[in-house]
Length: 165
Image 1 (cartoon, rainbow, N blue to C red):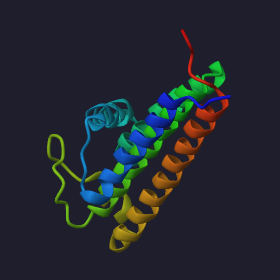
Image 2: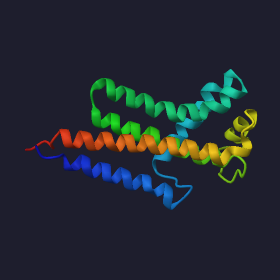
Image 3: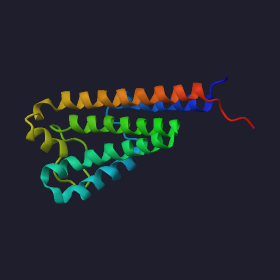
Image 4: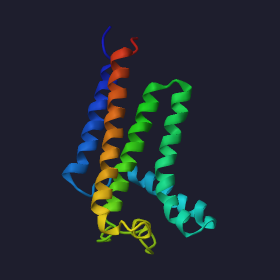
């Protein structure tokens, strides 16, 4: 059985996409416009539930929406769709890690100004002075999720040949 070369090419493309975060420590991709919309929607939907939930809501939605999409594809038996959404979830963790590391410097632009989510959250838990470490741990978790998704894509590509005409 021959491998599905399109899926292997997709895995290579996703890996190259992942490497952009190491070329530019504050990489912003086309996908981040979607991620930002979900992040901001999280603040809107969690606003009635108090300050802590509202500040957490952006990150919660940003990570939960792609994870729910992954769950949907998993239940449907669509291995490739599942793997892509797992990648998307990991990519969001990468961005959250960068956002967390910015909690003290606050160099990243905030939509609409206001208070930095992670400055508030880390200060609340007495971890603001450790924002670099916490951010790196979240980024590392995102990297693990990304590599898991790449493993899934390659595994799927080797299991299922491309459709022939």
